[in-house]
Length: 304
Image (cartoon, rainbow, N blue to C red; front, side, top):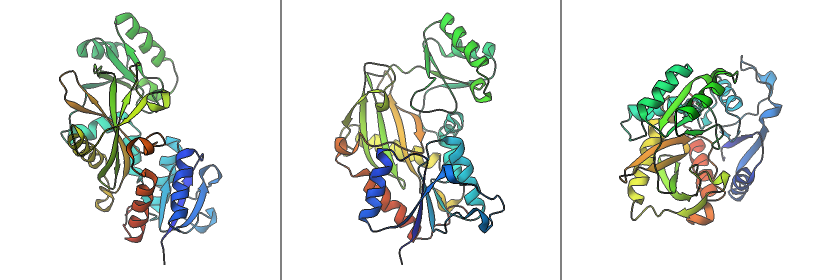
């Protein structure tokens, strides 16, 4: 009897359609759940009618909604991919940086501050230009490169009055003068399965913002180092229960420094891959679905 998977999503984008098609091709026992319809009982009783399943595969795009859904489900013993611990770490840039630092992985110099005055001191310690990022956010939104003191003071003042406490946690990072490109690697169950170069004339190189993707072969050139660093970064953020470690499905962003060293920038818990399938020649949704089904069939107690 095949395992039953609960596919939780908030919006069915291209990636979710590709994943659903891959599940269908495998004949998977799948039940779709819209997290906008959820009313979860914290007692874990049957009244909230969350479907019985062997594993929850979460593809929601809202960080807070995802995290609390997974915490609630794991509390009642439901295994989840990715786990709540992985989502909590990857969804917060400061926690990600701490996990990378603990693992001894190379990453840009980073500072945390909580007032405009301390933030300015952090920026001037790192040197101009510097980058200010929100600790929680995606797609390059509210990421600012500040080239001088005037720009830094203006951005820090904006952060101070935005209202959300997250915006007042100042995540300040050295600016890496990358050569017009960076890297994204896709890690499934601890294995780096594909990677792309992302080229852009803009200093932010997200494909969601128009960057051009090219394949980064994993077997040649810088590829083996990319694969090793990405797999190690994925393991670094996969804390929590021992059974869950290495099981995550993640995208790892890396950048080349001026002297050619590869640095880990971020680890993403709900990866987008629509622009990388044809580019790399890797059927990413099929590999993800295979891993989800294998994890469910193996009965990994991811939440316990």
